[in-house]
Image 1 (cartoon, rainbow, N blue to C red):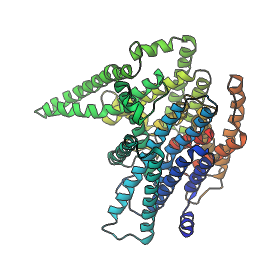
Image 2: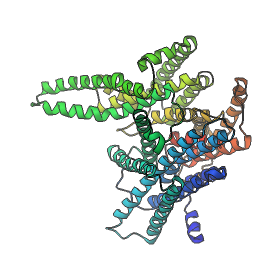
Image 3: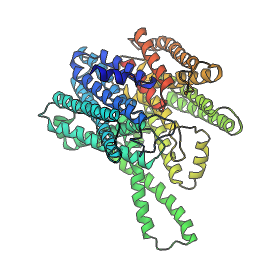
Image 4: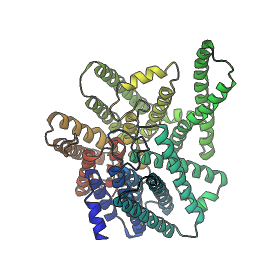
Length: 563
């Protein structure tokens, strides 16, 4: 066994070493009551590490067209979401011990952890099966066989730990976990085949696990509200009351994500009814296609999704009217904030769009100015209007999704214009089929804020996305590009100077932010040693990872801040 561990240690690259350090920090912070959850996370990480090494050292998964220039990222993609939940569980355990949170909230979060873990585990099983099938026509080297067997052994042990922790008598809970896993496997296959060269396997694993968890949460909450007892007593404990804002955001986002399937079905029915293919008919088809698109989108957003919102939450009015009443409950503050955001967006986009067309500035540096724009927009709102910022993030993400659907489907009259405008801000991580960088920036800032809703004894945790992306990542890129000499690796572009600048800038921002938060009434519980470790680990991950750092770094930083 020691020889096996030494062999795997010899295959550790920078990204894997940083992820190993991150997992170790999480495990050392576990209370005794969460030991079994930590064992499961360790087994998941070992299985993912073995597959990650195997995928990068062979062509076993070459059937998937992944993002060019990116490693497989299986380890990082498989452990990120479960680690976020286990970090949140550690935080909530402290609250329960202090009688500041109900035990039902911890039980609900525990089920979400196991659901996320099961989703990632089933994806790893699918990858093992894929590697096995690819080796049937070609005898694999002995090292590949060892990696596959080791990964499967960890998967079996993880499953056993899950069964023991949940209890063998709770068959419905295990079935609920299995449904999440099967859905994640189907979804990751769909993502990798429908959007080739858009994501690495690790990025696809993170996205699919998150989406399955979000859909599962919506389904469980809906069934609980409809049945009144089934899901609450047997499968998922939803003890905490949902806020109206969280329901609105969930309905908007999931409605837009499901909309392309509904539109595709309606469009096929319409095209099937056409009997000719003359040019005039094709022109009319484009007009009717746009009419069908916008009318279907309006019907879903105004009728169907609000109906679901009112089913699961007592709004007493149409959700759109509730949003308007919420905004005008503090009109001066919230309308002033909206006016400030519009001015910043208009000036920044107009300025940098013209620069992007006429300047020879590196595209990656130009995009970092938008990170700074995010800091100037979101920090004041997060301090003084956090609930309104939650709602605004959901609205902005809904607009981004709608525009990307219009761009991909080339819906006239906006499709071509949106495509031309968005392509001015793309880089090597975006593809012609799907532009993801603006989504990742917005979600990187929004997710830590959304996850921090409810009990939060770490005031800096909601700022983790804004600090790591808006300040740390920006300073690392700018300083590294202009002054960087010493590179972390011979093949990489990241420099030691850039990483040092990113870590230092985040620490400086925290030293300014903490007194400001204290002056507004926050009780500070951050320890500088833990903060230094969290900033350093996230900064090193930015230096070494070949994955989409906007997606991973905020979640890793958030998890470390919660400990």
